[in-house]
Length: 292
Image (cartoon, rainbow, N blue to C red; front, side, top):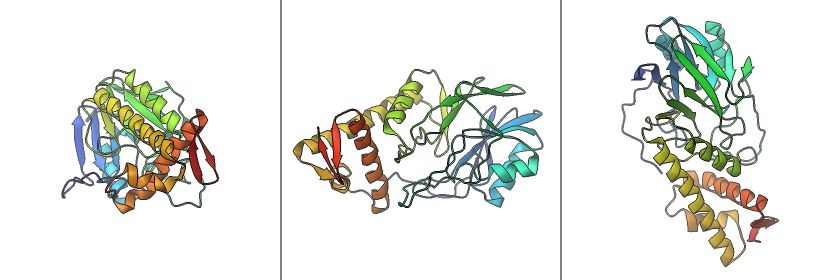
């Protein structure tokens, strides 16, 4: 389990992370959110307008902190990378307070009786406009371009700040941890393709929803692709030894894993197995998986 830095964390404070970008940390730390969800305010510090990216959980103190960071500017758009409950629920109350439109990813609610290894989906999310890959939002001195990156969720978007070369990566790429890919909506094949898509770009910095800015993005993404391929090879090796259910992969693949993260590991292995099945390399017989 990644080590969370000691308190105090800058919860509720606007931090200028680059000339056009301020960051506000929400009060929702957890094993899956690190020190909390980071909301970004994009625009000239003393300009007339801005955008808010990933407004976060519906917490009154956090919404107050976002308004303080906006400092009287007009919000051109409240933009959400995806609809997990640590990212988008504050969109509606912030829109009600400010009159700003909600723009970004498509709505998505996935019903499941199974325990989740991350936040459930936000049923309140109702965008005024859904951005397609390559569509833009513009304000005074800033331009944000939607970059479709399905995998963590099918509706996940990143947003590229054209003026600085920064990319707001939501949960697709994070510096503190790998992204959780949970079937049936999370898709390992899509996730890998989205990582390859970022490798082909020339972004200078990543600002993710959790953790510090990533200043060597290609190096990190290359490592993430290698890590996922290593996991896939481990699964194929274990299947080559014998058929087994998902839970029997975990002790072999994740030595000394925190018990709280076992559900996430099982779901990640399941996502890999589904992808291998799709590619004709594995198949399931009931709850038992075997090599093809």
